[in-house]
Length: 254
Ligand SMILES: NC(=O)c1ccc[n+]([C@@H]2O[C@H](COP(=O)([O-])OP(=O)(O)OC[C@H]3O[C@@H](n4cnc5c(N)ncnc54)[C@H](OP(=O)(O)O)[C@@H]3O)[C@@H](O)[C@H]2O)c1
Image (cartoon, rainbow, N blue to C red; front, side, top):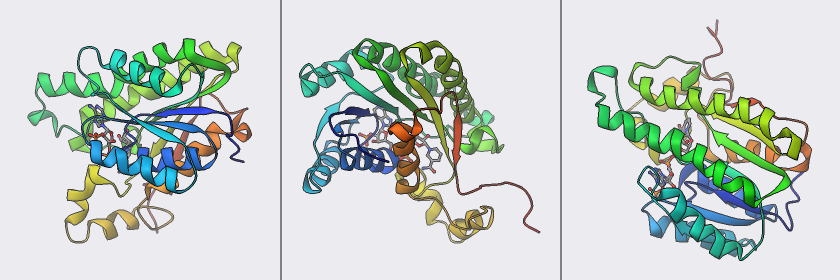
């Protein structure tokens, strides 16, 4: 598994966390990788530098998602970086964080979350398709919030439910081009997204205790699963939601 030599990849939200690990892994497997980010230029440059230090090829693209013209900005940067090469792998990873329980969720916050987590991935895929070679890969990052009910995550979980449905239906639409469309579902993973949560004493231990494999996830755990779906070994998997949570909340552990 893992020979992506001669291929290209776009990973959204690749400056930090899971996206960064995905970009590093796809680049290590040989793909020229576009490292997309929203605001944190230093982190995106660090990701590119780490890839290049390991012998890979990458370039950064800045585009804030969820604002007018976001997809235009993203694809202008992508076109420049790929200089005419087609796209093989698209990983829709960037997402906004949970907006809190229903009592605290404003219409503006709700719209913003859907704009970043649902509308942007949908229209990024739409714009990527003409650039994509037949046999390409579309992978979107969901969350175990779609199968584990957590009250502060309701609107966030709704966005993740939407992208899971998107993946399932697009897989059927794009199969005739040999493009696979899959979704990966991380559980609690140590990144900036939930750094504050993990600062609370005992939270990591608590979540580990709810997880069959008895620890929280690391970005590389998710990246390796994405790499499988992106590789030739994943060619017969499409329309699938792959749980990459170490078995979070599978049931009582008694
Ligand atoms: N961490 C977890 O426990 C966990 C669990 C389940 C699912 N997930 C999912 O995994 C994915 C990655 O999460 P993560 O924990 O790695 O997040 P993270 O550490 O907060 O990193 C988020 C990345 O997305 C980019 N981003 C966020 N909002 C953006 C926007 N509006 N426009 C452009 N870029 C934006 C950020 O870029 P900048 O740095 O430039 O802002 C950053 O590169 C998300 O889809 C998340 O929902 C995470």
